[in-house]
Image (cartoon, rainbow, N blue to C red; front, side, top):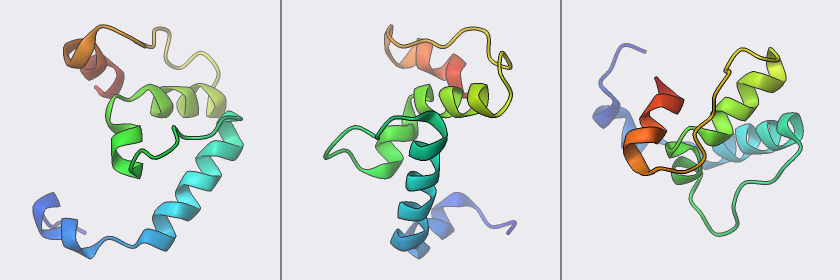
Length: 77
């Protein structure tokens, strides 16, 4: 806690990432894209928005599913 992300990057725990991925998939009712690394699947914010809307319906009124990086930034802000 409290460390910059670049210091934490090489301290990843694949088993915890897999556990988190399984939980997210169970909550949203869909699988992550095949052959896409965990962090890449979350990068555009679409899965995270779906998760938030499952946990609290309607919390995110607009999810950008296309439009490039600029639009996807809205998903994670």
